[in-house]
Length: 139
Image 1: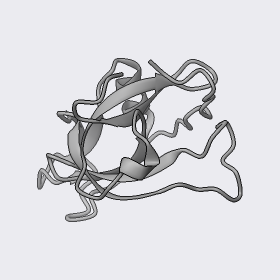
Image 2: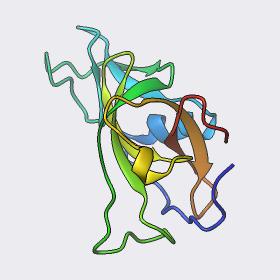
Image 3: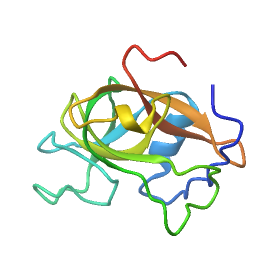
């Protein structure tokens, strides 16, 4: 369950990212996969960074990963949050890296290499955004 004090800004839909946000609304973490070379890439953009193909398919990720790095933005204070969020770079088990927030953990216990799984929390207008929680942490 989301912290009632957090009112995350609504995600921005673009032609390249709409599939990602539509998947989040269904509780799915989707990443672009090249239809030619099969490479995953994120953030979404119109062509594969490896082979420049423009044919892509949305690929469903397991939602499990490892914290690669993290930070807590303090100043300027992040819009929509009552406390500084924990911003993480997560290496998904399938390979791509994603930027998100870490929830359900005291910042003093965050470390690189922490195993996490995806959850979805509402934004201000009710859309869902992916966040990550440490494995074994209660929702």
